[in-house]
Structures are given as C-alpha cells and as structure tokens.
Image (cartoon, rainbow, N blue to C red; front, top):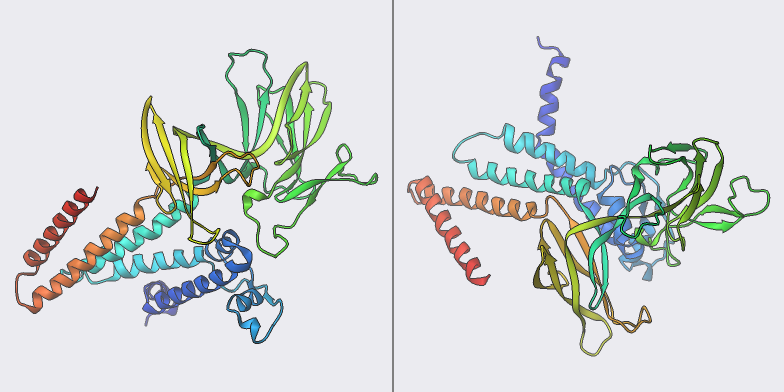
Length: 435
C-alpha cells in the first residue's frame, strides 16, 4: 500500500499541470485586466500597472473608483469603498504560475508525437513570450530625452532610478568630469532612524545617509524639531494629485539627510539632499570641495540624436493632438542618418528604441521654441514578443496543416512543410518589397 506522503509529488505535479489551474489563472488575469483598466481612470496608468500587473499580490481594490469608471454612480453613488486585502494574486505571481503550468503541462507532460508537434511548438513560443516580459521587467532601462530644435543629445534620464553623485571640484579645464555614484538600491530601504555609511578611498570623508523618504520635500522646521537641518526638515508628501490620481514617478522627488564625516578629525557637516534642489550640496574638507547631488540616473546612448524639426497634427476643428512627429538625425561614428519618430512608430537602433513622448510648441515652456520629448527604452527582450508570435503562428499552422493532410489522406510532413515553406517564402518576398 502506498502512503499518502509518497503520492504528494505526483499530486503536486498533477495540480501544476492541470487545466483547472490554467483556467483559473487565465480567469484571474482577465479580472486583473478589468480592474486595472477601470482604476486607471482615477489613479493613472503607472499606479494601476504597478498595483495590478507588477505586484505579487494586489494590496487593495478601489471599488468606488471602478464603480465610477463604469458610470454607475449616475444611478447610485456608493462613495469611496476600498478593500484593503492581499488575497488577489498580482500579475507577476499569475504569470509565474502560468509559466510553470505551460512548462510542465504543455512541454513535459504532453504526449510527444507527430500529431502534437505543432502544439508543443506553440506552447514553447508562449513560454518564450512570458520570459520576455520577465526580462523586460527586471533588466530594461527606460527614461526621457528632451531636445529643442537644432540641439543634439546623447544621454537620457531614467524615470525611476535615483543615484547620489559625489563630484570633486577641480580647477583644471582639461580634466574630465569624474563622479562617484551610489545607486538607490543601496539606501532606499532606510527607515526612520536608520543610518548607512558609505566610504571610498578617494574621499577624505565618509558619507552617512539617514531619514530617507521616497516622496518628500524640505519644509521649514519649528525650533524644537530634532531632525531639522539648517532650519528645515524632510516632510513626506502625497503621491496623488488634487483629483486623487497617482502622480507619475518622475514628478515626485526623494529626499534624505546626508552627513559628511571627516575621516581624520571626525568633524561632521550635515545637509539635505533633495531631487528638486536648485543647486548641489557643497562639502568642504581639507581645502577640497565636493558637490553632492541626488538625481535621476543618467544613461549614455551609443549614438547622438539631433532634433531637426518637430510638428504637431491636431484633430480637425479641435485643439486635441492627433500626432506628434519629429524629424531627427542619428549621429554615430561620424556618420549621419535621417530618421522620423512619430507616435506608435519608434526608431530602433543598437538595442535602443526611441519613442515620441511629448511635444511643446513653445507655449507651455514660454520660450517660443519648439521641443520634443523622447522616451528611450533599452530592452534586451525588445524583439522577443515578435519572435514568439511568429513561432506561435508557425506551430499552429503546422498543427492544422497536418490535421488537414490526414483528412485528405496525403503525406502529412511533406504536405505541411511544403505549404509552410511556400507561405514563408511569399511572406519574406512581400516584406522585402514593402521595405
């Protein structure tokens, strides 16, 4: 007689490969998409995406926001009802479960035969697409580059990553700029009262960080505050605007208290680092001066972009923007190449994608000069979804053609592969003619 414990691995494998698990996971993903889309109307795309699709578990569901998004408040207003629960799995968890289910059920457990080869190929392609999403989430870098007409840029600022830069002020004109960088992953977990010391052999002081706040601004302090620095303290602020919608991360500023401690004398200088500060914090130690700033991380492009011309197209009879278009010149290794960037039609080069993000005809800035804002994305898995879609199509086409071959009683492999090769050749010829 087999004990229940010896059957546990088999039962676990059967559960992970079951159609019931796959159906439940897909139903929950559909529910997340529905709720996230509704809440986006009040909280914005970034906040809804982080809550429903990038999380392990959904921390809360705003029933009131969903009710209003469906316009049901016109019939009955339920007010603000929020369910603070951690029961509903987030998109990250559900995609991980779906990956395991497809891998074990669609690749390992499935019967291997010529009849199922197309299905196996399609399952593998879907796994490849899920992996592309994971790689993009963990390793992609994205930021913004803003240019006025006639200007050239080769750096973009990250949307979410912050860094602290320590730069020594030099007198030599030809000396290259050098800065020590502390990534935000090394200090953003600091809580109230926590301290962390950073040191480097080239610095005459140690840098102590404390009182880190992700969304904050300096405020004038009362005389009795113990956390005040030069008459100011760090106040945490709301991440929502006046209408209750979540503010984009790039519009929020982080802040912390920094202490420069002289390695020799132990003398301390204290200041506040804030993203929106008008000037860096200056530290003087041993006759040398250092600039310390808290800012978004800057990435260098392998090419430069010059904005030649930018235009905005509006819907007829309205002031609503229909299309932003920028004519740019890509400069790499002394060579210039004319390119066009427009909405939903990015320019891709050297592993980077350049999207049209914003446009200003000079009215918003008050300068009268046209400018374009570009979103720069470096994504190692940029083309993986396209590749996986092609593989899915090929797998399903092979599967249905082999079923058709058996129905009309011809050789399945010769019939199916011959038609697939002919189809791919025709498709490649059409694409070659179009491009």
